[in-house]
Image (cartoon, rainbow, N blue to C red; front, side):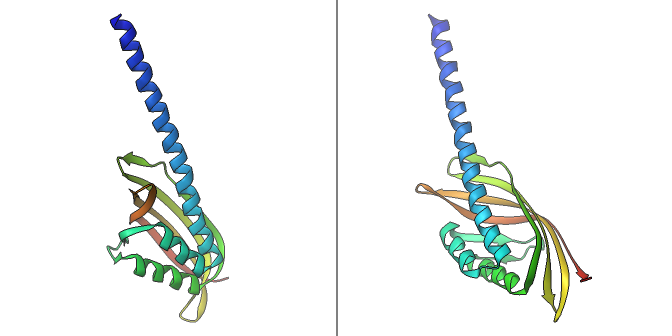
Length: 164
């Protein structure tokens, strides 16, 4: 009889684990969709779409910290995106990889890896810019919605070259 109770408990725990794993996969797919929406806006240099994304997805008190320890609130983050879009003349390559989330209660964290190559206007000359960066992003659940609370850039390598 005790064995049957133990088997039921193990079965219940495995079902809960499978449900939790399925939830994490669904959540990862949703977050990838969110990141791809912002990445598409950046590639198209669509400031209105980027601003709409930020208003819809950033949590109150959002903070972005660069590798150089510069800090940007939501307003500063948006302005940085807008400035980047104004300077970008052409996106040659852009790839974003979103890592699997680690979920603890109403908070999750994940890593992103970004590769970018484009033509930018800098000091009135067109230059080739390459940027490879990684971030640790934290999302929090507010009600039934996940919102981006922070971005911490953990790696960054940006280079400017004369355009050929």
